[in-house]
Image 1: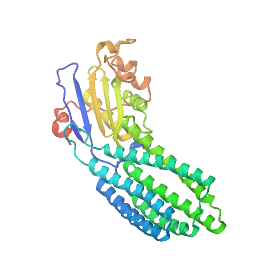
Image 2 (image 1 turned 135 degrees about the horizontal axis):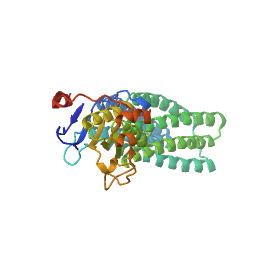
Image 3 (image 1 turned 60 degrees about the horizontal axis):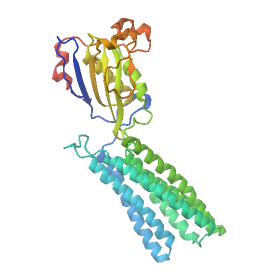
Image 4 (image 1 turned 45 degrees about the horizontal axis):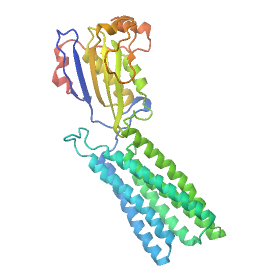
Length: 382
């Protein structure tokens, strides 16, 4: 664990420290099912994406050739749809490489959100395609064109094989990344499209009912709309710096305030730098005489083990006298952001011994000894 700690002096009654911890490990188990770990490296993710891209581009070229030979505008149009899949995967690969660049200059987190930009572009593309297919589907329901069912079936079967292989390759990558998920949704929806196209082609071939093609297009449009909206919504949460889906800041605030010796937790912020990379900052006030350093470590362990938050910036101070007075309404910070989570009257009066009886759910922890070896830089960086 990489920590940068400012250790308060022993003689200061109201010592304070702004503690920062950031672990680079990924894929560790998280309680409550919160947090997404990068179980695979970016390099491991690039390999299946590259394989899927080769398959899609190869099939797209073959589809164009067959379409020209058969004078089929439908096949050439489908090749255009495949082109959007190829662009989606290529965009994901480029974003992945950009996001891997180390932080520098004003970009203190690096360019990790390039992956979120890619995911949002893929989501918007799916939404636009769904609108187009709805329009085309309705138009073809009204005036169905002549469709060569045999060509549609043959192309649909070949497309199913190619897209099953491409989907399998992308499923091996880390889909907790919205960037990879965006490319995966493009290919998955293309697989659905080929299945629907094959069924529609069989109906047309066997019965001559041309409107089956339009109905298949409308079904696929609904699936595209659902997938595209999900990508735009989830990437939008990251851009708006909302807490990761399924992670409650209020719950984390209450649990942090429930740690022993904590008087109040406020200015608590939880956000995602990119998908699978949650971060948290908070201001924690503790009872006079309590060990700020130990409280910070306990809070850090709790959010890491239960919520998978590995990047934390916690400022821990002793509570001022005015906050310790029962019924005192004045906030500690003049410009506090978000709700404050009080630690309870027993804590506020400096009575940690009565905490367990007052709140059975409150956590008890063992503080390290005051031996200076507990606070050495080597121990902190170990």
